[in-house]
Amino acid sequence: MSLPFRVHLICAGTTTIICVWNLWRTPSCGTVAKAVHKALGRIAMCTSLIGLSFGYVAAWTMPNVPRASKIGLSVVGLLQLKETLIGFRAIKQAQRAKGDEKKALIEKHRVAMHRLFFGCCLGPAWFRVPGWIGLIPAGQVAPPWVQFLGVLPPFVIVPLALKASAGKRFL
Image (cartoon, rainbow, N blue to C red):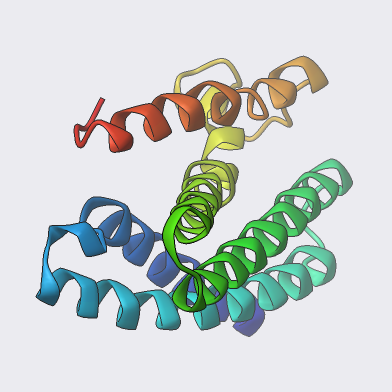
């Protein structure tokens, strides 16, 4: 395992764990939760961007990564960058806003963070699900139709997760 891939995995894992925590324990859960959420969010901002950078280096320099996987992971990486920056910008603006504008910016942050977690942090997992459930024999490259299946879960799960979290429930 290359050094860039190790750094990517450490940062991606850290970002994912923080996303799980921060989606579960939001500032509305109290003063302590708010402080922890904010501190962990700052760490996740850094680990997301560092992990993204090293993920690109790993994907494009490791010889055993198929070209289609490099492209797919790069697209997920661009979405990760987009959602990380949208979420960061929205929450920074919300800190200075008042009333309905503040609520709208917090909602924008919430949506971006759900997309970051369910679409980007879990993106590489969604591409591997067909292999995990036996649609692809071990050691074989998935046909394009199976690889396409990895793109679909976030389109279903993100809206369901947003609705559930707005209702303060799991699903």
